[in-house]
Image (cartoon, rainbow over all chains, first blue to last red; front, side):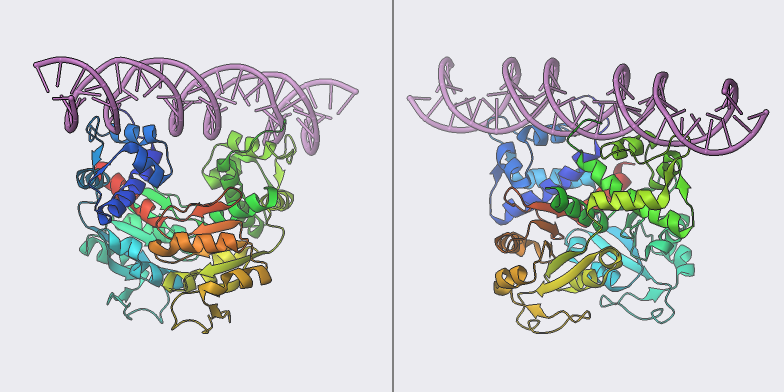
Length: 209
Length: 209
DNA sequence: ATCTTATTGTGATTAGAGGCACATGCGTGC
DNA sequence: GCACGCATGTGCCTCTAATCACAATAAGAT
């Protein structure tokens, strides 16, 4: 396949594939067809084949895909073959929950720093043993601990300021849970986890059918 | 404008617009152009005008949109002019955090029931005063309290079972935080909040540039 | 009253993603 | 060793969504 720009949706689906493949491994399935995998992920079989085709040839014609191999390859494509160092900013209810959450721990995502503006919290430890630091130390600590991703769990009003600080500290990827749009310079990727938007979608659906 | 099927992406953006409009109201701005609003939301101005055009004419040519009016209209479109009754299932760290979170409380989303399978938790109260019930009472309680949306915060393995119970209890909209794909019958809308996928996106971005 | 300026609403255009369908090629059975 | 069946890889087509560009039109200035 020629060298093409890869759709963001493809990357998102690759992530879905890894989960389905992990499930298959648990069930001791060794080979899977695009048809079967498609059912598990709720997508079109051709879609799967095309997504994979962006990165090479992973299947065997007449057979399918070897589950373990494919999982390895897809993880490698996504960059999940290594550990990632994260910092959490805003250690309220949600922030604490995330630090301990399986979605992070399952793969190689590790929190190595925590920040909060609340003076009452500074110096305290999270359940993981992580010490909470004040935001003004973000620059030094993040560089020190080589933080690669920042997770923002502050109220919306502070999110942009925190994002700026993270960028300043050399962080190139931000996961934003605050319900607001964050501006970041080129070269910094922001992903929003916006459940208020999802809720509104549901409300609309229920309202109109 | 003719009667057309409305893209899901449009609804998602409408939700973004409401947030930007609320910010503008706080800043006492009374009129806004599609250009300005587009900047705030990070989208194309024509996109905004077209999104709105699906539902009618809301602007004044040569002037722009009256912020307060537009916010009212868009909220009405999304169904945010009324209260919505939710149930939370899975009251771990994340579940607890969500029940108290501003994203839900800000608009008219109200938790009226909570469920968890852990016998240690049943009968206890959340910070909001909500009593935790066992899953087998879901059917009766949800119908009793007229729950309209269900929020799933269980581990992935239980998510599908819980979804089935919610559907059985007459719930027509599900917000799923578990990292797994949920099957639901026609007429039931499922939205996934999947931060493990978002993380993987960031990992990919950092890996390949 | 008319002209100017600003901004909407929308038809036309472009871009892009998803799905179909078939040729390709691997493995198995005879 | 050959033929058959099956699932991949991929060119092509379709459909949808985003963007452009302009005509319509409202407010304010002259």
